[in-house]
Length: 197
Picture 1 (cartoon, helix red, strand yellow):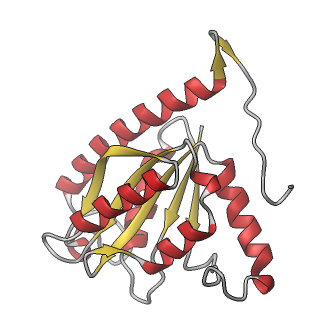
Picture 2: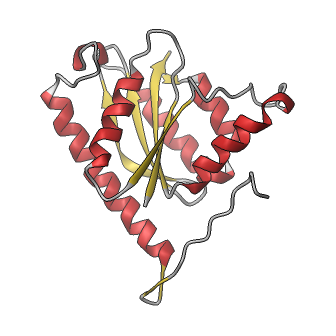
């Protein structure tokens, strides 16, 4: 099973990337492949504007999302919602999310942040045809949770992240097994890429 982590933060001095890399490290201990797609480096154009000059990056990100069996969306909370750059990516790539289990992770510098962003993002996932998992991971006071090198310092977050991933992987594996098994017989999963179409 392959899991793509879509990181929806691009601002200078961002903190959400620490959470994305931490989750990728935790997943490395599981029997899954991971692909971290960082919208800060895989820069997409504004949806509907000047896409011609960016067809290569659009196609590459599309192929990476399409090849994933499940996704994690990591976003900072801005003004009570998820990031604009993540919304832009979701506008570009709706077909790649269909019938896939999708976990939501919201990051905030405040003590109460992340709830609104994560709830809104779960609703958008449903509208994309994805399977929004009921549990979500909300990371508050992120600047205190990691040191400057990105090492976790918050034991409470470690426990919450492990619980979140355990539930996420249960759902993701159940859906993956259903997709790859027919009448008790494992079948090859064929994926199509928009790049190859």
